[in-house]
Each structure stands twice: as structure tokens, then as C-alpha cells.
Length: 550
Image: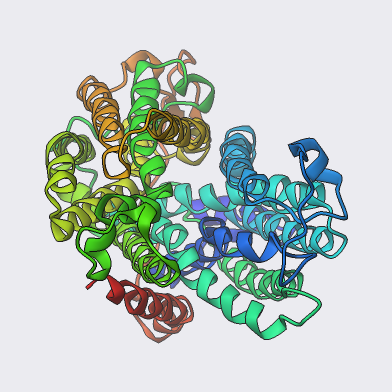
């Protein structure tokens, strides 16, 4: 009798083909999370690109920026004689997350067919190749090349790299879906924690009287990231059809929200469940991303002199020394939020394995409403700095936790077969939230300042607005129910077929096939060390900066 492994393994084909990545007996499933982390820690540098903005804003003038009066955004794209404005460079963030969502949605179906190895390799070439193109743009001072390189091509790499491990990890860890995706997506939040201080070190090393050292830094980072991403991509394996961990049985009888059926990619977006979870992700991200984006100035403007031992001194009255001291505290605050963002991805996702995905989202959304509508406005008005900082750290953890748990939520509701592609389409909510969240925060803040509101009061309407957003997400989450049977795929011996097809008479055999054993052996320990040591270094640097808060 032939097994699922025997029938699935081809006799020939590309080394990158999905069929060539099917695991064989003796493979250790704990080697997969480090592969995912290797990719996510590299593409996660997208969050850390702000470290380049100020140096790039004086790439021509170096010591004294060369400005062009009245230059438009279109003009900035092609100018070679004026320094770029930070506002022009900030569009890179928008490109990153808009293109990420679009790429994940467009190529998610291809990823499921091609497999994680091929998708990871393409991601490495796009992300690192985009950085090389951007480096050429910096050398020639062409902003449009930076946008095309890192923004568009790199954004495609972001999308493919972000979703490439999702389906694979969920299939390898059906018994710990939340923990598995949390471990991988934790890396995306941690990428900036490693990349930002490393980029700062490299820029200072390459800086001269004639240059700020950014294009050289891009090339070094691109080379290093390419090695790590290729190692992660080539290390991917997928389990054979019907594989399950030894001794594990699906918990469908215990939790009706966890299905044993699958919904086809072409049908998922036709269900109300898809759009309800889409709203949950949109509101959770929109409510947090705008606040996190202004974290440093928000802390300085609200608490002003309290941060630096100059009680009663307003933010606008700071002298140069006080501004520098407050900025250092603000930087520590941003680092602390990053740390909680990362920790939350693992904590909340792991907790969801115990209490269920729906209950986990209900918890973070309800807690978010409470914090934004009551505790945060109260502490900002009364000057309780520590409680304010702690509250925003909890918010950052829930922001990360929402990202890390949504793949497992989708697997529970739609099954595991197309979860990577369905997740890709869901990430369009992230693209919209990246624009929507910043628009809410920026518009309200600018209007408050224009109206003459004191700087320590301008954020109060923002807090109440995002609390209302989270309340919408809370209601949407409550409405999620198991998918109707009409959308579920039927099974035949060759695999799943779309809903409505004739029912089959045979079933795919299953078992562990001797795969997934080994636990945390020496090979797995070495793989984890390769990603864990850089991550620990990033945590150490972040804690040093965060110490300024205390």
C-alpha cells in the first residue's frame, strides 16, 4: 500500500516546487518556525525605515539641508538638486502597507499552489532587490527610484514574505495554531527592533563629510537580509496530505467555531464571516496604527515638562536641551511599544489556543474600548505618566496580538487548505487601515492645533474616536458564526473540491507518517539560535533606550 508521501512525491521537477518540499519521515516540525522568523525578521524592517528619514532629508546638503521653495510632491520625485522633505519620504510607509495588502490578495492563490519555498525565494529577491534599486535611487538622488524599489517591488516582497509561512505553520501545528502563527508574525514586529539600531550603526560607519552613508547601508542590509531570507525559504517543508501530529485529534467536538471542513478560496469572500473578520482587523489596526505612529510626539506634548523634571514647562516652551531630553524619552517610549507589540503577538495568539479565537478578540476589543474611552484620557488629563505608558503598552500588545491571531481565526472558520490565500485577501483591511488610521489621527490633531487647543489636550478626541472604532469591531466579532455547510468543500481521494460538487465515496488516509518528531533537538536548537540571538540583541538595545522613561 502506498502512503500519502509516496503518491505526492514527484519523480522530477523544480527544486522550488511545492511537491519537492513535502517532508519525509524523521523531519522535525520545530524547524519550520525559525524559517518563518528568518523571513519575517528581515521584512519587518519596513517598520524601522523611519531611521533613514532624517539622514535622507540632508543627503545633498549633509550638514545643512538644501531646500527648494514651493517644491511639490511630483517635483520631489525627480529633483536632483534639492534635499527631500521628510513628508515626501513618509509616503514610503503608505506604499509598504498598501502594496503588501494588494500583493497578498493578488498572489495568495498562487502561493498556495506554488508552496512556501518558492514564495519565500520570490519574496527575498523582491525585498532585497528593491533595497538595491532604492540604493541606486539614493546615489542618483531620484526619489521615484526609492518608491519603485523599496516601496513597490519591496512591498510585493513584503506581501509574499508575510503570508508565505501562515498556511504552512497552521498545517504543521493544528494542535497549536495560535502559538505557531504568533511565533512567526512576532518576527515581523521584531524586525525593526534589530534593523533600526543596526542601520544606525552602519550609517555612522559609512558617513563622511560628503555623504550620510544611507545607500551603503541599504546595500549591506540587502545582502544580509538576502542570506537570511533564502536560508528560511529553502528550509521550508510542507506536511503530506492527511498528516496530523501523533496522538492528536481535531477538537471540533469541543468548539463549534473550529471546523474540520474547508472553504474554497473562490467562495470565502462570499461569506459574511470573511467580511466580519475583515471589519475586526480593520478596526483593530486603524484604532492603533495612528496612535502608535505619533507615540513619541504624543507623549512629549501631553506630559511635557513632567518627562524631564521641569514641572510646569509646556512643550512649546522647551529650549534645545529640554527638546533633546524629551526626544530621548520619546524614543524610549517608541522602543517600549515595539517590545510589547512583539510580545503581544506571541502572548495573545498563544492565549487564543486556550480560550478560543473569538473570545480572544472579544477580550482585546473590549479592553481597548475601556482603555481608550476611560483610562487613557483620565491619565493624560491627570498626569499619571506611568499608568498612561502602561496603558499604551497594553494597546500595542493587542495590536500585535490581533495580527498574529487572525490567521488561526481564519483557519478555524474556513479550514486550513486555502488559509494562506484567504489571509492574503483579508490583509486588504490592513492596507486600508494604514491610510485610515493615520488619517484619523493626523486630521483630528491638525484641526485641534489649528483651533488653538492646548497641546496636552489635542489627543482627547482621538482617544474617543478610536474607542468607537473598536466598539464596531467588538460587535462584528460577536456576529461571527460557523460557516454554512453550503460553502464547505466536499472531499474525494484526490483532494478537496468546491462546494456543490458531487460527494465522493472514499477519504484520504491520514496519520503522522513518522513526521513531526524530534522536539527541540540539536538541529532545531541551532536553527532557533540563528534567529534568536539577533532578536535578543534587539530586545537588549530596546530596553536600554526604554530606560530613559524611568
